[in-house]
Image (tube, rainbow, N blue to C red; front, side):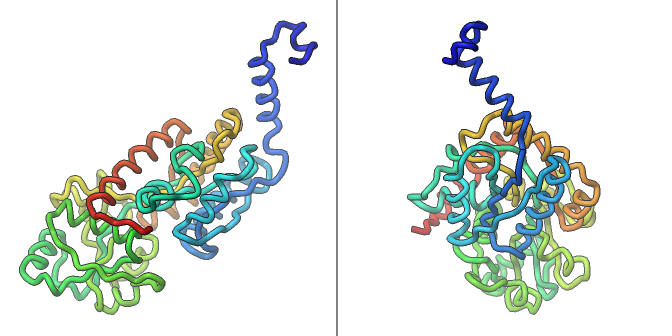
Length: 323
């Protein structure tokens, strides 16, 4: 230990705390990168860039998005897990990358539970049961009756095995005691076929469908959440429809590589909570069935742990493995 500090009676721990505090006081001294494990131009990418803009205002340094798509988000997630834990490389985690993917693969190049330090939730997107207007049912009870009487007439579009839309559908099937016919769209969006009525249903977050729902080109039969969403006040929750244990939500949140100093993580969390107070951004999230949020590292860590456990149960029950 440095003789100067020892002469003043500081322990080694005290010296480390001083060094960390000074580092946090100066942070950030340069641009901050956020690794996003999805492609540029997608909805999640737009969300990440919006929050990066707000963080730039709060932190006083440029915060930019570095897209690392591919392999179900594994490529970007691995890059973030291996980054230097100094606060200058952060990561946008999602339901898929941190709650679902760890249950789909036996081996991953990262440990979702150990390789990241949660900073703050960014926002949540409620999941909707989206239907073609040609579907002869306007609510969940009507849909279940139709599926029972004519089981081969209702097909559910998904974005491929193990995708959020697929596993949400599996979850609904378990909760409603219904057998669903899944139609996977591995590389193409299913929305054109859903609009045309070639498939009848899809479970998804609402950003991609909100405009067509408002225009009457798609129907929204139910939505997750403890209460009705203000943007869709006439749409009942799944709980109102009697499906009380169906609660998938799509979320995004900010994380740092494990080992990032706590003082920096706390400073980033505070910045995220300030960024989440942007009225314009909050209204944008509400407009497509979501809610902009910010919380503490401890709250976000508990949120991820609970969400990962729920999806683990769904994956095991559906017996889905991708390796």
